[in-house]
Length: 278
Image (cartoon, rainbow, N blue to C red; front, side, top):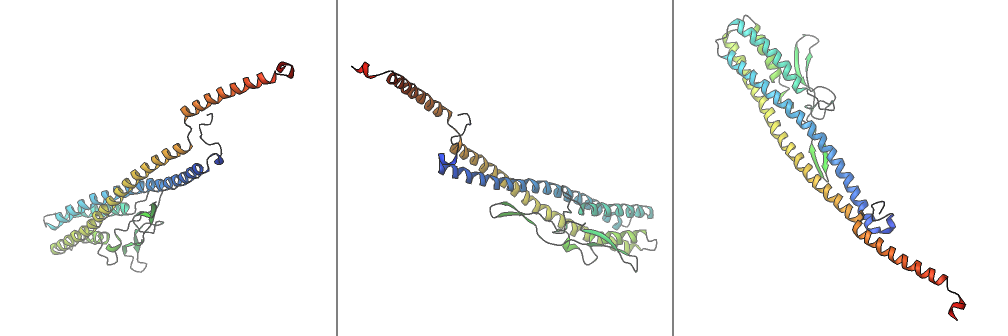
């Protein structure tokens, strides 16, 4: 009763002791899965924030592309658009190179130790080009017995390699807008190309957001399932190992009465001798 345990040693009830051991092992496994789920939840929330910011930046790039394609912008306005596009390009790259709460790069597939999107300079011409240095690898994380969730993201891998991705397209557009010899036709064509590139990029972002939503829903569902199992697990451990105080008090009371009777009998018999029997 002092310990609150029904068993003080496994030999008191070997079957119950083994059941408790198995339940505790299961509980440890589930707690490990819950740690993974909590980490994934943090990563996914960060990814959702970065992707949402990318969408907002793309919306503004689309507005600028439409404005410069209208043919009504003055040279001063074209220069202002060029400056803003340069800033938006850097801001978009910053979001694409976003890191997780633990510090690894999130959108480079299985390459997590370096930013996925960088500018490279040709040592001969001095020209700069945006390149993707991630991969399309996967990184499954176990969240249950035989169940995993993909933790890697590579939404932009297919948009690079031809030079017509949004980052290089923005740079080309800026060059045309700042070139005093650019014709209205060249500016209109740059606008069309920019609209195509930003549309493809935003499609990739939205596809990743949709997939991410499915992952986040799965995390929530599995967390709830594990929580229910843990509660049931603890109830079973209590049934096997916790002391029933009401029953224990009754047993103690009966034992005390029996002990008193034995003690009285012993005292009575210890005072008896052969002369008392005569």
